[in-house]
Image (tube, rainbow, N blue to C red; front, side):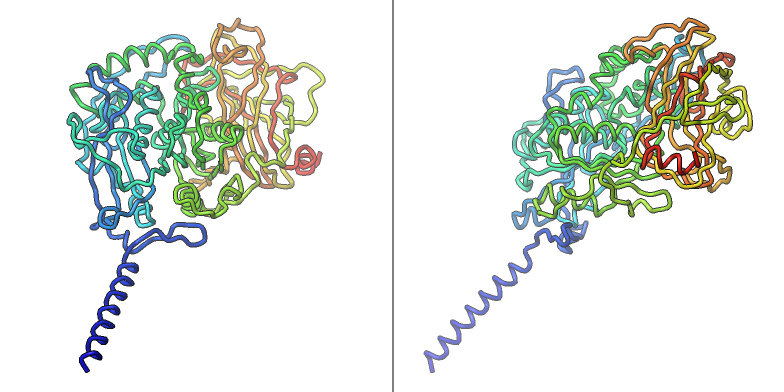
Length: 614
């Protein structure tokens, strides 16, 4: 009987131990994957259980005038299991200059654009101060609910010279690439993190797997690309959303001083003032050294030429070390950060053999890819799950009547079936000239008179106007699919030594309804300075009456123009939403015989002729 009790007792202990081990194994949380995507894990999903702390990571630069290397402020949000169970997870990293607030939008912050081309603005700018906002340890709550429950750690940082980060904002300077690089190095044990901005107590990222993915929108999308161009180990994948990839392309177009849409008169120094939310005591030094000595003297609002200053702030020029997988996202109707910004980087990534995909929607600024695309991207490159994402379609295009989360898959962008179709101008542009597949046999010249008081949308709707030239295709009998970059070669003369040149591609008749879709009227746009007809980096005054030829591309697009519409090429001078606005009266004369429009049409010339019955 005693032996039987001992056996029963032993069995009970074994059973309890087994149940304990089973329960422990069941309770130990880990990421879960289904259909190639990270799933929401209940154990990671209670924000009250998340561990949140902040620190400062030491960078390689000193830009604020003291004798210490700049440290950037970093905030970490991670599941409690990274502390209680020794769980290591990959990181979604977001960095921004906006987290601590921006300057107030007051009168005078923008450059005065009402002056003659090539002349300085009649008044200087005002420089508002940013009132710093935010609390420690929370820099931002963005992306937390999306990624922490799916088994990621989310890290935020304020970029140099903003919030509680040391240093100075440089708008594309080297420190803005090296700061996120330092954070990624810290996440991999290669850089130092500290509990305070000036102390010696260090912090280790023992909960990090070292695999980092970055994302963000607009400026927050620029900085992942900036970090990727350093080639830093550990940055496995980036998803930039509507990123500014070149400050020249953001503030200039083919030699022309051109504002981003919605911010007439903005330039790189304006953006500096807008984001400079860092230490108030360091601001006078930063203003003098960065804004007033580096930015303003080199940005050149007089000529708009491309120079070494702008070249250094073009991330396309720094992509050679880049190896992070790229999923690019942009809107075809983003007239703030225009769609060329993502396109140029995507094509270069392709050339370098970097795993890359591009997602374009039909809306304006911002707009991330559908969650499933982002999830598959990060699941593969950060968690190492073999979900075949690298073999998915290269391009995801949202069609005109579809929602942003329902893109159509294509082999690539531009559509590989798109071919260049050249169209030539027929007389009558003051009213409605023609676009033809044959070149005029005789010389025809038509003249417009610049007047910024008429907006581009007003001009496109006029039956006739002396302030623009308009040339249209026949009414389409079948839809035409445009995919890629339209290009114009134009031969023109000016009555003055300088002139704006604006070109719109429009779909007519213009839909005047308030609920008109964003895709229904403007197809794409472009701007150029005729003074730069020979070189983007060197301009020369125009000789009034002398003809010059230049070729430039319009913004990339992928759009289906429906049957019943006409494709129109509108040429005018000053664009009231984007350009400097000189006194009305400059005359531009276009040589129709030596001017042409090239459209990227899916199916090529045969498709175009069929659609227009030519």
